[in-house]
Length: 118
Image (cartoon, rainbow, N blue to C red; front, side, top):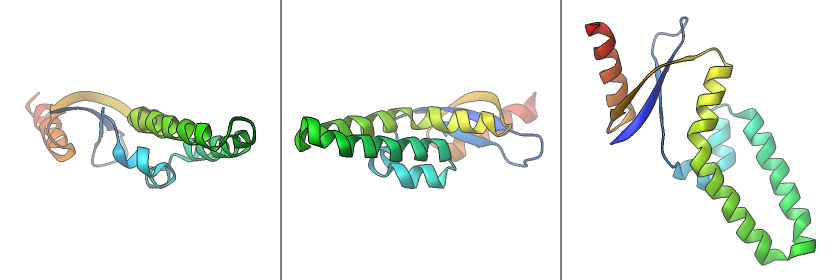
């Protein structure tokens, strides 16, 4: 079971559920994850971090820079849900609640059922 933050906006029909867990997709393919979710600032910062790691290879060596990249990928994987939540808030979405569910679709169904029952 995973905790999902549910976001909604007045001009949107369907709410969005964001899982609060490690994202393998974000850790393994950070630029693709950023493009899919419209995280432009995160993409720019990722590219800047790659340039810094590339230049730091001259000072600290290739193996150390490789391990730093692994740490960067892990950080992105752990913070991916926070990046998405922050981007949704910036776009005018508001957090409507949190639901524990097994999948995003189930979280949305539970949220909509709880909202209609109230």
